[in-house]
Image (cartoon, rainbow, N blue to C red; front, side, top):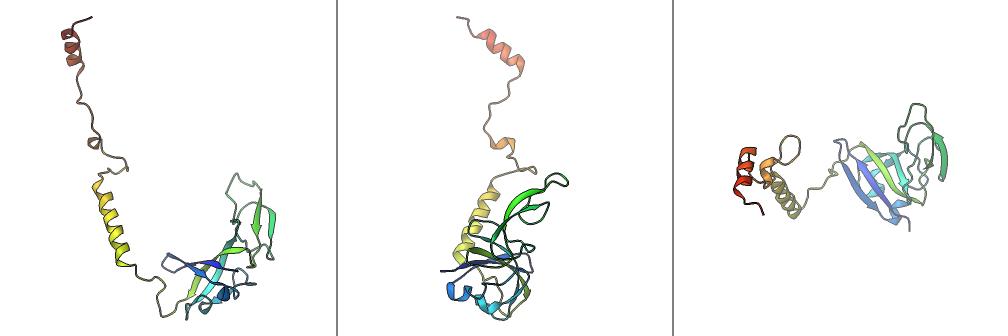
Length: 175
């Protein structure tokens, strides 16, 4: 009944998502932000992870400074779950505590010790082909340095000088 999505941040700056089924997910219950978790819980032997945060089923983020498993409405100036406003501006925000419980849906982990098997599995060949074809399509569209299409990409009427417009107006009979 309890399944978690685990987002693993690697040392090279990439993130990997895994779904942890119920029997393995019970090992996360009761753990707090900052604790070390063995990789065997999610099927990655030799790895060690540090819990950096998460969010519950409604999307409220976990905060390290809020004790316990439930949600709380806090008055805060900065930190997780708060957008910066004016200097000294305080906001009332709903956040989750630092303990993992049943209503948590996502857990964020950071690699502290790497195992022998690499985390990032090589992509399937079909996926690579699809990406390369989309990359060639984007290269076909000509764009200048500012990201806008060049003027020659758009069909336009030829520019007619004001003298030619006056000549056309004289030639056309008035009705």
